[in-house]
Image (cartoon, rainbow, N blue to C red):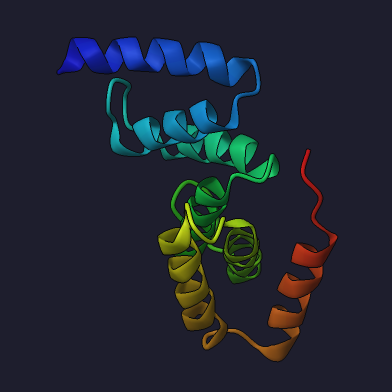
Length: 132
């Protein structure tokens, strides 16, 4: 329902602007799919990154996907690997097992396309990452 989607966007944006990672992630999803807003990959990435920077494992996973396929950002396997790695390590075992398993799977598939130097760089970036 378009009216409901527009209301959801309104409330998500209010919470997202206050720094709520879950709302930021959901706003990213809405921009990614064009639900309640015009579809906009760059906006989706913006909101995913804000949530990912706070440690939201699902946002980190989606950010990994955006870098893997180059949707809304230039394709970058090092960044994709970093975000998948962070998502896998931060997903809660009980609540986000599917996210963790998918992040591990995607990271490993991606690693097969990367050089050892690229993998080392991605691991270094993941190790140095700190939540904001």
